[in-house]
Image (cartoon, rainbow over all chains, first blue to last red; front, side):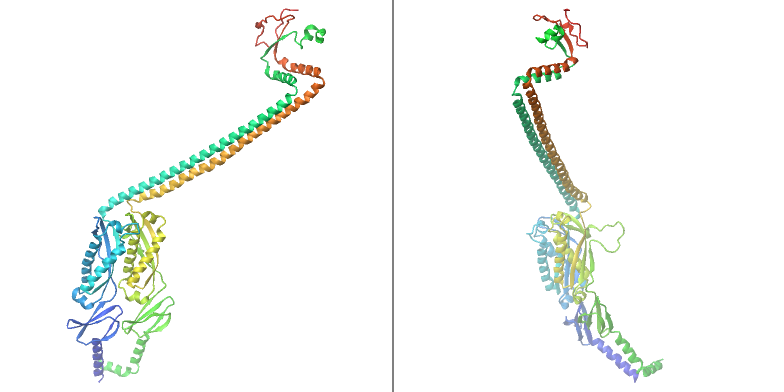
Length: 292
Length: 321
């Protein structure tokens, strides 16, 4: 009795397992009947199928495909190494299964599609449009918008894939071109360094020259004024002297001459005196000479 | 054996089965900590996108599945280097760190991205490899922005602007992907020219410094020179003024002396004149060599051989009287 019950329970569970299935938030379910797809389930939840039907899961999530970097040629024959990434998801599981079968298969096809589109797009722009400090010109983002649109169209039509985004992750130059770029960078930097130093010299010279000029001006002004003041002094003194001495020129001459004798005659001087002189008359003629 | 099992079944229908069932149901109890939020899926479908903190219950596995996220936790992503230990001395290669700048120069960069989970179900279920996608989006933003920026700006003042632009651009991309992530901050940790040209770049910085230094030296020279010149100028003028004062005072003094003497002279002319003359002679004659020549009538030639410069005393006079 109990054995039968156990058997029935197990059988019931088996039937449940073959009939009921859940579809997760992250996946699609494709119900196939003898290999042919009959139902695509996109909304998560609990579902039922016939036991003879099969259920395949497909990832609903956004996939990131990162192909290796490739070299491309721009319109002005410049080589660029471009590293893309592709955001895609399965949109039509049935078509996906029939065309590419699985994710590696999808990546294979995507690689070719993206490579072709990127190559075509880059071949139509100049390098100076993509890499430029000016605001105008084709920007990378606009270019990749176009590539994304083209890839989306092709993938949706052929593989049941929705290409969400194709973007450039990294842009670089090929190794063999880098040396010439480095050379140019070095030369550019050297030129800049030279210019900075020359500017410094120029400015310094200017500042020094201006300072020297100003100093000259200050000093010459002061010298001029000093001479003027000295002149004033001399003139004033002369005026005072003239005013005073002018009151008795004869007396002045007497005084002044006597003063000058004190300075002019030194011990080296020899003076020849006449015995007739006023000073010596007393000596040579006696007292009666003095009265004369 | 089978008999024992059926016996057990027979016995346990009252005791073991409900106990087992109860234990199973208890596994549906879970705790959401204060910094966490729970996400519950029932048969694969999200039934609760954000379970608040506390003691919660859900129908146990496999009916429901539980995920927990920390919404405010800042997660980190690195560009151009690894956070984990690298072998010593191994610098990240060009493929990881090199970017093209707007003026077709090459520059190496390392950055750290901080992000939070903004929409837990989206973060958990919409994208297959979220961190990989994030890294790609941030690098795309960096590539596009650096391809429009000149290298000098990057190396000097442009870092904050670039960082903000990268946050904006990568957030924009992630919105398109509906990844449920909020980019909080992008920090450029290191920005340096490639090894082949780094010396030249460093020299430019030195040259800039040299320029400033030369200008400052000249300014120092000027700021030293001008005040000194002014001081010198002042000195010249002061000296001149002193000269003027001295001259004028000297003149005044001498004029006054003359006037005073003149007054006395006017009072007694002959006497004063004689006195002045004799006093002067007393002063000057002693120093000099004197030769007294006796000449009562007219002049006779003086024998200058008498005049001997070296002799101190006066030689004897001419023909004696």
